[in-house]
Image 1 (spheres, one colour):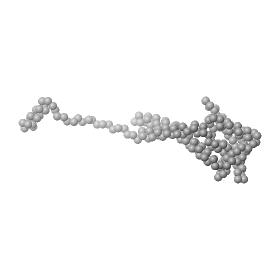
Image 2 (cartoon, helix red, strand yellow):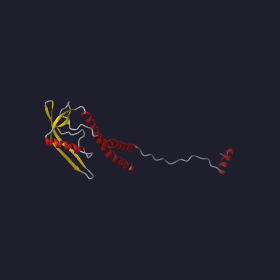
Image 3 (cartoon, helix red, strand yellow):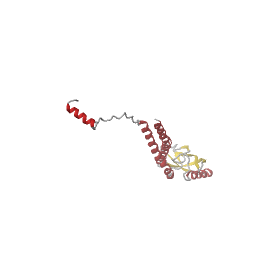
Length: 198
């Protein structure tokens, strides 16, 4: 019983971190690709940058950057505001994409020049500054989105199999098969039976 509990805990150690992180990465990757495909049909309009910031989070080995913005644009005779920068949300330290976007937005804000944004014609309140898919980010997330869920799934199946398996039953005492005695006793038994004494 103790061995089963220990083995079950060992499997759960892999299920929770690997499976959870893997499915989170997979959902983000799917959302990124879906946003990129959707934005391919959006229309280009000019927008005025209202805010341009760069949030930096220092780590042990590297820093994570996130360019943040807010811009206003007109579409269909109405004015809208949005803060979406790319098809993927949040910051990262993959290449210099975040820094490059921040510089462009900062320059546009300081000079008062418009930038091109892409607006969803079916829902004009949705817009994005950069609709391109970042190949480097996809390649970075792909192993986490594929290998980690498989490891978590395998660990989950192992945990399920551990709880379902039953301990083998104990075997009873082994019965010895009857064997006729050999030697003089065997001969006496045969001779007595032949003489009619048995």
